[in-house]
Length: 541
Image (tube, rainbow, N blue to C red; front, side, top):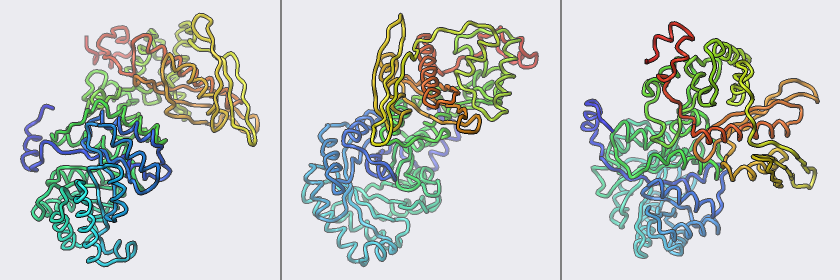
């Protein structure tokens, strides 16, 4: 990254190290997200993705918790990954024995140290906590386990006692201490002061582990690293207890781009890794999630699209390709000439300046009604207004049967025709009829393009038992192409089928044309220059 003089000065003043370690705890603290429970196979898949990403340490789990957790840690430890594999343990002997049974060489040992936890949770004295910590560390070290020691609730622990615990942990053989902001109550300034002070008192490396209860986990982690910590505990997508942990993707990009800190992370895999974790944990990301959200590089406003199409840096602080994402232009009431033109170009539709005006006006009218203009909606509008022939669909639904009821697993049988009158019939089960039929469709279309359903919602169009409903979906293929589609009908299942098939056909069109959601510069679009005299002057020749 090219540095400005301001960035260099900031680096010099902060004393930030050029290279820090990333300790990923997605499989441990991240899995403690309420409602998340990963199978052994899922944890192994995520561990491999994290290793490809380039994290330094993978905390594989908490072996004492369950047989499945023990098996997952053991399996991951045998994968011979480039990353170190760690596992969590209380300072109790029985916990540490589980680490030994897993053949783990890196143990993350912890005990609470705040008076609040000691009195109300553990019901022990400070002296007993300190004794337990020393004994646990010594026991682990005696069995060849390298120890990273955490003082749980460190940021609410009396400072003199915290320092004493960490000093004794170092004497007992811990190779690293970790400072958890367990309930996210620190501010960046206070956390930086604490880490800087601990650096003067402790001779071993320091990690930081921040939670996001006040939305400050990433900021606090950055402050800790600036103050001298050389490792940060993070999770993909910011998963974790309550409001979650510090987000790996946000921390890495902010630290590297804004503070010139180096990692072993392949940032181009951030988007892909985020999607793997989201799929396996079944925790959907907010569209506006920084770095990896679907709208992180999405633009609708005419002012923004005009700028970003001519020079992406006008409204993007980084190139989407840097994190493995793609730029996306959204049609809507805020859209302008430049954005709609670029979308039509991606759809392979050429329109006259007059028809483009009509299309934009219609898009704004739909937006003013509070409705979403999907990619397939725009395609349909453009073809109706410009008289462009409707393109042949790659896939068509020719037969559908669904079985559902009490004590019956919802099952859908579908027949899809495609290509030169080829067809395929499949059956799938699901949690409901819609889930079953969409899974069946995906089973057929996966051989052409692997797509995943990113968003599904239903909006009522009219009232009554015979009401019509609009189904809106958003799908993404394995190349990062994102497409939205909608369909309206009284039968929600059929509307869902129509939307899904339309979306898949749109994805296939983009793939066949070698197109993606990455928009092109309008400098090569002279036909549009006549649309409005004022905007035309801004186009590059």
